[in-house]
Structures are given as structure tokens and as C-alpha cells.
Length: 378
Image (cartoon, rainbow, N blue to C red; front, side, top):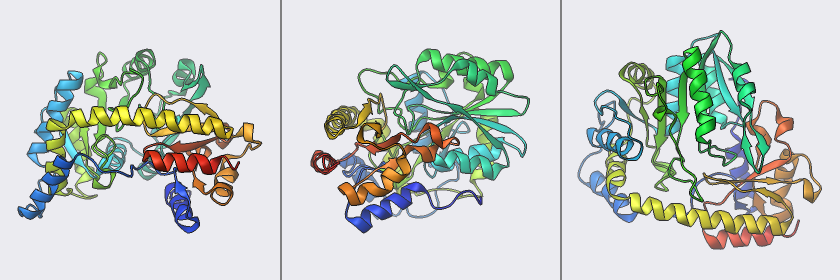
């Protein structure tokens, strides 16, 4: 772990506090989730559900996750053995990589990638193999030939994040089909991070990789409640996969955290069953916030890539006379009183991301407006 120090999110959030800047770096909302769901957590605490819940997760949540996968994607998972509750998606990813990858294995990741992926792969003793996402027609995408060339005799898994953080791209059916074909041809496991599954815009569809022919039995699907329900601090995630894969992940997870808070689990079960209309309204609100921040960034002089999902916008800093996102992000709090994340920290090859910084738009409208006014100083 020597190459991994304090996360960029902690560093930039601390900088925001120290300078009194508006934090558009870390992706957390500044409003709460559905009131009735929050109330269920309070009721559970006051009702005495404050001891260890079952290691695989409370049955109510496992059943709710199973129902959700069936209703939205037509995927059937047995809640007793094919669904595992985790401490957020981050633990799910780490436990999955540790369970399924051995020293000397290779794991393909799409670059830029969320920073915990690299750490989880390093902890397993495997090696990460990045495949570059390039901008084409206003969105980040990959070259299927480059992806195919990345597969070698030691390749064990492909880690797929869609909707994608930090770029905001949502992989198309054609892109996902090319990934599925490689997994089938080379007997690879797919690990899919789908935490933004319900936060797509402009009618763009999220399609789970597990829905493609032959993929359910070789895919570990990971998601969580934090982003969909604006409760990122609850850290309630889950894994859906065939028995053998879930058993392997649980064997690791039980020695990481064993289990997670019962009140949050019960509240999330309620949310999945009764608050999906709230999620739909949240998606519409986020779409408007995306447009609001996009217009402000363009007015401030940035070139902006319009995201199809997630909480994030990629802004090109070159029109402002900068070409090093890390240096720009470090100066931005003092120059404008706003914090962003330099996209290059999500790359193995930082030069590909040096022109971009990532702004989060999951904030109140007044916060976005104030940030935009400050950015106009640039």
C-alpha cells in the first residue's frame, strides 16, 4: 500500500474547510433522503434493533434487493445465498476483488477509475491493467480493440463502472456487449459497480452487464443505497451474484466488518419498496442541477462535457490558460473559493487526464449559483 496515501477526497475536503471554499469536489448531496425512509431508521433504533444483524444482511433488505433486481432488470437472485449486504459499495468491491483475485492475476479497469479500485487490486496482490476512456463525440468511451488487446493469460476479471465515475458516461448496449463477448470468450469474471444505476439523464438507459446472455453466472453486480437515496453516510451496499461467487465474497467480508447497522438496512429495504418515486424525482432534480452547473461553467470559460449520469461534470481547463489539473485544483480555492477534484488522480497515465477537473452538481441550487459566481473570477 505504499503508493496509496490520503485520498484526494479527504485532501480536497480539508482544503475546502481550511479556505472556506464551496466544496464541489467530493460527491455527497447537501440535502437528505426521503423523510419516511429516514423515519424507519429512527424507529428501528428506538425499537431496540441495535445489536449485530445477520452477517449476510437482514432478511428484509436481502429480499428487497432481490425484488428490485427482478422488477427493474428481470434478474432473479435468491435472497438467501445470492444477495450479500455490505458496508457500502466500497467494501463490496474490495471484498470481491480479494475473494476472487490471486497474486499474479490481472484485473482490467477503465481509466480514469474510482480510486478505491486500485487499492483493492493492490491488496489482493493482483495487477491492474488500465484501458483508456477517450473523448469521442462529446462523451468518454473505449476502443473495443484496445480492450481486447488488454486481455492476457493472467487476466482474471474486468471491473466495469457504469454509470461511470468520474466521467459521467453511461456505457451503451453495444459497448457492454463487447465487454460481455470478451468475458465469455476468455472465461473472465465481471465485477460491476452500478451505484449510480438510477441517476441517468436525458432518457439514457442503464443496462446491467448481468442481463447479457451468459453473463449472469459470471458477473458480481454491486450497488448501494447512498447515491440513489441521498444517504451516502449510511454505507449500505450489496452484492448480487451466483451462490459460489457470493459465498467467496462473504468469506472475505466476514473478516472485514462481519455486518453493518441493522437500522440503516431496514430503512433501505423500505426505500427500495416504497420510495422509488422519490428517486425518480431526485433524478429529475439532478438533471436540472447538471444543466445549471454546466451553463455556469461554460459562462466562466470552461469547456464542458455533458454527463449522461452520476453526480459529476468533467470540465476542460485549457480555455482558461491551464494545462495541469492538479496545479489548477490546488490554486482554485484561493483564486475562486471553490474546490474541485483533478481528474488526473484517477489515471495510471496522468497525462491523459491533466486537462480536466471534476465538479459535483449534487448540491442545492443556491450553492451551485454561488460557486458559479465565484468561478467567474477566473
